[in-house]
Image 1 (cartoon, one colour):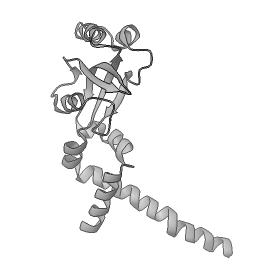
Image 2 (image 1 turned 180 degrees about the vertical axis):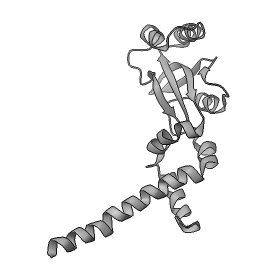
Image 3 (image 1 turned 90 degrees about the vertical axis):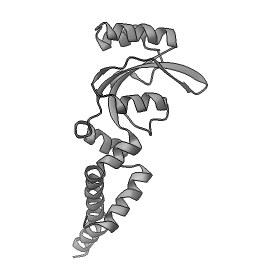
Image 4 (image 1 turned 45 degrees about the vertical axis):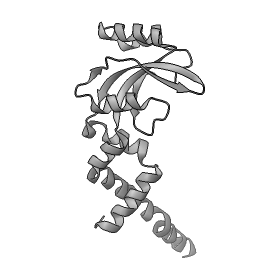
Length: 168
């Protein structure tokens, strides 16, 4: 009997609130779509980090000429790159990329190569980046946005507001 009570207590104190929080967060990312898009500017892109602007210009030219992104990565990416051309979610919480790059990705209408070289300083070193937009269509990237941002403090606060202003 004691262990049954312990299990019931665990369910009531941990499991059920955890599931409710998860559902509430999911609801937030559905209901607050416009707010999420405006605040976090999410997009999925392939970003190639290059050592300098000159190298990034060569990488951009290769991408525009139709060279496979994997080949461009092999040829132009800096050795210590955090961004190695793999699909990645980019948001305003991505602090090591320039605001201009994040804004450009979120505003671009069509998937494909972004015709610009971006720079940003990271740990005292300036890197150059080229990007290929995969998607900034919210319904296509919502699951990635949810995964990336569901633990964010601002999202948690917004979910609490949602809880107290709706029948969540």
